[in-house]
Each structure stands twice: as C-alpha cells, then as structure tokens.
Amino acid sequence: MTSKPPFTKILVANRGEIAIRIMRACKELGIKTIAVYSEADANAQHVQLADEAVLLGSAAPKESYLNVDALIRAALDSKADAIHPGYGFLSENASFAAAVESANLTFIGPSADSIRAMGDKAESKILMKRSGVPTVPGFEGLESNEDFKKAAKEIGYPVLIKASAGGGGKGMRVVNAENELSEAIESARSEALNSFGDERLLIEKYLADAHHIEFQVFGDKHGNLVHLFERECSVQRRHQKIIEETPSPLLTPELRAKMGEAAVAAAKAVNYYNAGTIEFIFDLTTSQYYFLEMNTRLQVEHPITELTAGIDLVQWQIRIAAGEKFPFTQSDFHQHGHAIECRVYAEDPANGFLPSTGSLLQFIEPHGPGIRVDSGFSTGSEVNHFYDPLLAKLIVHAENRETAIQRMQTALSEFIVHGVVTNIDFMQAVMAHEDFANGKVSTRWVEHTLESNSKLFDIGQQADQLQSLIAAALADVVFVGSKSQPAVSNETDPFNPWKQTNNYRN
Image 1 (tube, rainbow, N blue to C red):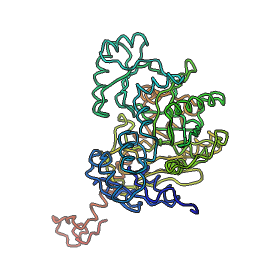
Image 2 (cartoon, rainbow, N blue to C red; image 1 turned 60 degrees about the horizontal axis):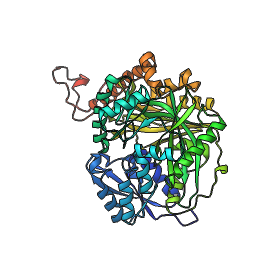
Image 3 (cartoon, rainbow, N blue to C red; image 1 turned 30 degrees about the vertical axis):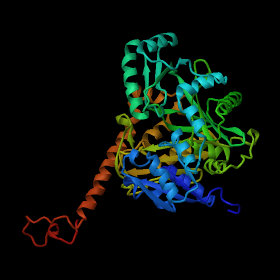
C-alpha cells in the first residue's frame, strides 16, 4: 500500500464470513480492524483475525450485535474512524447510521436519509412510481381488513401481503382466495411487529411464475452512480435466496440495458451513494419487470459481481465512505465470464429447511481454479441457534455458464461438513436439474419441486443418515478414548483387554 489508507482503524459491526471479508479488504488497504463479539462468539474466527476485539454482551443479538450504544462505545474506546455494518443486523437501520455520524464516526454505507427512504417498502414504492420506475400493482397505506379485501378484489388473486418495514421474507404471506385473507393479515402483522417493531402492511399482486433479478448499483458522494449488472436470484426457499448467478440466463442485452437504467434511476431518486441493490421481479407471462425493493447495503451475493465485473466492492465501499471519487463510468464496466454462488446452510431441506445446530466435527472447504469460499467456520466451530445458520458462501467463476455449473457441482461434491445437517446435497441436485440448466427456475420452483418431486431430496436424506453415523462413530471414538471412561470390571480374565485402564481399545 503506497498511498495513505482512507481510514486508520475500522470497527466491523458484524460477525462470521462477512466480518472476515471486510477485515481482509481492510488489511489490503493498510487499515487496522476491530472485531466485536458476543459471549457465544468468543472463539469465532472473526475475533481471532482482527487486530483488536471487544466483547459486546450476551449471545442474544439485542444484547450484542444489535446493541447500538455498545457498538458506538466500542468504536470510540478503540479510537476507530469508521464503522462497517456488513449486512443483516444494523446494516439497514437509519437510526444506527445517524447515531454513528453523530458520534463523529463515518458510517460505511449510504446516508441515513437514503436508508430511511428505501427502508419503508410502502414509501419506496410511492417514490418509485413518481420516478417512473415500474412497480408491482398494489396498494399502500391500508388499515382495515375491509380495505385489504377491496384492494385484493381490484388486484385479483393471488395477492401478496408484505410488511412495510420488512425484509428476508418476514411478514410476508401469499393469499390465494378471500377466505385466507384475514388470517394472513393477522399472522403477517404479528410477525412484522415482532421482527421490525412495525405492524404496517401493504398488498400487491402476487406473480407466481416470476424471476427475481437484482442490479448492483454503486455511487460516490460526488454524484457519480453506475450499475454493475444483474444477479439472478430465483432459487429461493421461504422467500430467501439460496443460489445466485450472473449474468442472468433470462436477459437479452437490450433488456439488461433497460433494467440497468431503471436501477440507476431508482438509486438517484434517493441521492444514493455507496453499494446498494435494486431488486426487480420479472413476470414471465408478460415479460414485464417491476421494482420490488432496494437493499441499502452490501449483499450476501456480492462476490459473483466482483468476479464478473472485476472490482472489489468492499474496498470501494471504504474508499467512497472516505470521500474518494468513483473514477469509473458505465462504459468502463463489462461482464467477464459467468459466476455462481451457493449459500451453504446448516439446515435440513428434507424437513422444511429447518436450521441444524451442533459442533462441526469436520469442515473441509473445496479448493481449485475458479473456486472461492467465504466462510467464518472451521472444524471444531459451534453452530448455535442464536444467529443465521449460514456456514459459507461457495462461489465459482468460469468462462461460460455450462462450465460454471460443472465447476460448482465439483466444488459442492468436495465440500465436507460433518456434525450438522446441510443443504449441500440439495444444491447439488439443483445444479444437476434440467430446469436449472435451461434457466427455467422461477421463485416458486423449489416449492413446486418439493411438492411434486420428493426424489430431489433423497440424496440429501441418505447423506444426512451417513453423516449421523459418521458423527456417532467419531463421538464414540472420542468417548472411548477419554481417560474418564471406566474399564469393564465384570470379567475375571486378568488379560482381557476390556479391563485395561490405559485407554487401549481393540
């Protein structure tokens, strides 16, 4: 690093693989890092890799990673210049961004005003309509169940009930008929209030056969703003992404350019700077795209954009936050090759994708040309129920889509995780499916495939059973080899090896 680093010290207000990703970017820029952690994460990798580490509180997120006062105090006590929120937790919290700036620290992300404007789904839809960006037909600002019934009739079933302040599939319900509406509104309101402290809902047309396509936008504080192309995110479970790729097999060059222009217009409407994502839903029946929402932060799937666009997004986040100009224009960027990301979760696809917890008895990541793994775990790490069960992001890059799919299949087969159930075999099945190969995977594809083809899960179930046997065997070896294991004493033969107390076992 020959030039002066943009900051001296950055506190990373996150955990796991994204905290490590940010720390590596900081190290390359010559910036020291401060990790924060909860009591449950005392031995976590991100804590060990940082230059300094500060304990925030107990395992509960509200006592640690969501504790605004503790985070800012940790930054000030450590003499940090800036705070990077990563994604999740407080990354899209306008009050946190404002509190960071009020403490004379730099928030590595957009302004609090931009976060606030795009954080409310109802308000952001209204803003997009004014800006000429297509939005899904629907209504905002409804209160009574009767208002929702009238709106649903006008839109036409199926409809989607969504939390105005929501995200990650929380506070979201698909309603296929009027007799389902009242219950859906009640459960969505309850979940929205528990998750976001805000029970407001909106209603919009549910596009059943649709693709989820998002565009990466990036801008500086001097008015420069570009898009870095799209990411196809249609392989989802419970409205949450599992597999992403770029370029999208759906888009033509003309449609890509048109949607990219709409994404930039959406970001400019809120004077956006730093990294952000404009999400669209693409209706296959009409070939029309609609604004879905904006994520005012770095995305989990940002590595596939980095690999195909040739840019380190995290380093530029930091440099933009320090006031640097983004020296590129739209014409400077081109897509190179094809990249796919699979999110490796500790969860059971055969059991509704429920999380799996426990100790990682083995955690061996794949390696090779065109393979990247972003992870915060290793053998011996503990997967607990307090946080998201994401173990790693497996990313591959190749010269074309066919080769990228083959490379991902190989990498998944070499990714070894024992001790918890994972979705690795499920993702292998997706990669091998003809629908994925043909780019015909809509946002409900996983749901429909689960209902109509349970064989998709057979490999995973068999592997899970095998993992259980291996885990039990490993645990038994450890148990039998322990000095606390009592010798069997009901034998009279003094030479019986089962009577020995020196840990010998046949």
